[in-house]
Structure formats: structure tokens, C-alpha cells
Amino acid sequence: MLIVGIITGLIILVLLVTVHELGHGIVARRNGVTVEEFGIGFPPRAWGKKVKKSILGKNVQYTLNWLPLGGFVKLQGEHDAADKEGDYGAASYWVKTKILLAGVLMNWVVAVVLLTILALFGLPKIIENQFSIPADTIVKADPLQLAYVAGGSPADKAGLKQNDKLLRINGAKVSSPQMLSDTTKADRGETIEIIYGRGGTEYTTHASLRKNDNGQGYLGVSASQRQQLRATWSAPIVGVGVTAQFTWVTLKGTAQIAWDALKGLVQSLSFDKNTRKDGAAEISTVSQSVAGPVGILGVIFPEAQAAGLGSLVFLTAIISLSLAVMNILPIPALDGGRWWTMTYYRLRHKKLTKEREEKIQTIGFMVLMALVVLVTWADVGKLFR
Image (tube, rainbow, N blue to C red; front, side):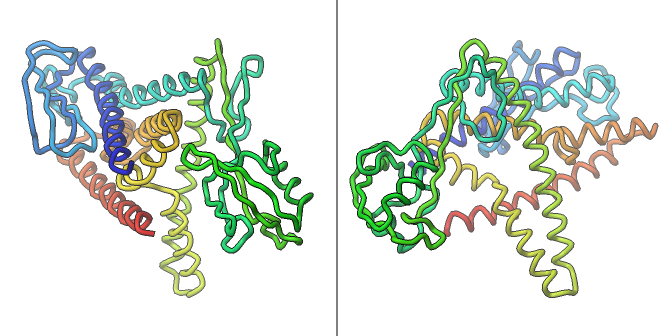
């Protein structure tokens, strides 16, 4: 399952990046900018063919490359200072803006489409006041799932584990976390029959509940319950609304992570021992909140695939949306960074020379790669815990 999950994750990531780059290429061609190459994966090149006529224009080199973690589109005269006919640099500010943001729009649209499909069959509710049309919404609650099982607790002794699904207690269906709490409280000190699900199979066990609540409950578990929202005619509206809502949540979350990381870094440089300790804890918390290629492919995708097709589609939508958000941020070497750099020099009425642009993008790329290495290191640590 791990290998299948990794392969599935690679395919999905490559497809999302391909769609992103395809957006750049199509808009470039429609605005008179020559597309020289469209590549899937990163060099070294494994295969290539020049196509005389295609959706991206004439004589475009299409390539497959050995590093399957993305893709790229190569435009003629990509530097802002290029001025020949067909050069990206020779295009107007508005055309460059459309080209740079086309990939963002493509990933955003993919998220809308996937969330619209999920709205028809079951869209997970993951935030409070998640967008929906009340007149066309059916709420379905999944079985209770054990989020935590305390060591040495009645649940632990009965063989229950994290992620097990609680189905029935003493023959009665457990339909909510509150009902679980009320049931175990009413039967405290007694032995109860528990029917639970694991890996698609139902099991029966017995647990002797505590007589007193020691802060971990009479059974010694905490449970969560996912809700799914279903719509019919309003599904496309829900798809757009939820995508917009998640975009805002992602932006806020990204800003919070950046602020916490900066605060932790500053604290870790303090002369005070306790402040340095707080800074290290802050950075550790941030590292648990982010995932790089290893975490996404080695942990997140296998878990989503094991959870079912719906979870995999939802994860794909969220990653597509995350790609869109990351590429509108002022991060050099990404689309947003290039747009912000171009706009800054335009507002300053200063020429963005090829040398200056290369220097900015190279420094940005090195910083970005350093962050990827740090996140990957943290991901590897998570895999072996």
C-alpha cells in the first residue's frame, strides 16, 4: 500500500504541475509569445519530440524527463528585458501578468472541479461554517473514529487502537462523541460489549470501564467524527464557494506558519536560555505543520489512498489549491515572486535587467531549495518515528 500510495502521489503531483504549466503555455501562445519546450518532470531528458503544430504552437519540443517531481514550460526570451518578436520579455505588462497567473488559475479551477464532484457524492466538512446551500444540503455523519487511545486504559486492554471505528456499544449504535461520553458514564464500572471496525472488518471485544473519570474518560479514548455534505443542483456553487473559503484559510495558515517560524528563529538566537528553548519549541511546532515531497508522497498520499477514493480526491483538490496559493505569494523563483519583482521595478520606473533578474531569482531559488531540504529532513524524521 505504501508503494502504491507513493506512485499514486507522484502521478497526481505531476498531473497538477502539468496542468499548471499548460496554463502558462496556452496563455503565452494566445498572446503571441513563442513556446519553445513543454516538459514533464525535470532534466535530465529521457525522451523528446518536436511537434510541428500543437495546442502550444508550432515546433514545440515536448519532453519527458527523469526527475518526476514537476514540469516546466520554456518560453522564448523569458527574461523581462528580452525584446525580440515572440519573446516573453517583449510582451506588455498585462500580458506578462496573464501568463504568470495562468498556472495559478488552472490549479484553482482544478480544485473547484474536484470539490464540485465531491459535493455531489460527499464533501468532508473540515471547518466551522463551511460554505453550503442549506436548502440543498444533506449532512451525513461517518462512524466515530478513535483519535487517541490512552496506554493502559480499558480501551487499550480491550485491544482498541487509534483509527478504529466505534460502531455499537452493548448493541446500541454510537452516533456522536457526546453519546459515547454519556454511554460510558452511565455504564461506569461495568463491562461493556464493543463492536468496532478496522480495515473494513467488524470485530467484537469487551472492556471493563473505570469506576471514576481520571481525566481520560471511563473508556480512555477520544473520538472524532467526520461529517460529509451532499448537494445536487448547488454542487457547482458549493465547489466555487468552498474553494474560495479554503483559499482564505490557506492564506491565513501560511501567514501564521511564516510568522511562527520567524518568531522561533529570532527567539532561538536570544542570549536567554529559556527564550532559546521557547524558540526551539516554536520551530518544532512549525516543522510538524508542514510537509515536503517526502512527507506528501511517503505519508499523506498512502494514508489518503488507504482511506478511500473520496479522501484521495479531496487531498488532490487541497494540494492543487495549495499550489495556486503558493504561486501567488512573493516568493522569488515562483510565479508570484516573478510577478512581484516585475511589478516592483515597473512602479519604481527602473529597468529589470537580465543580470539583475537572474540574481534575484537565483537567490530566491537557493533559499527555496534550502527550505525544501529542511522540510524534507523533518519529513524523514517523521517517517522513522
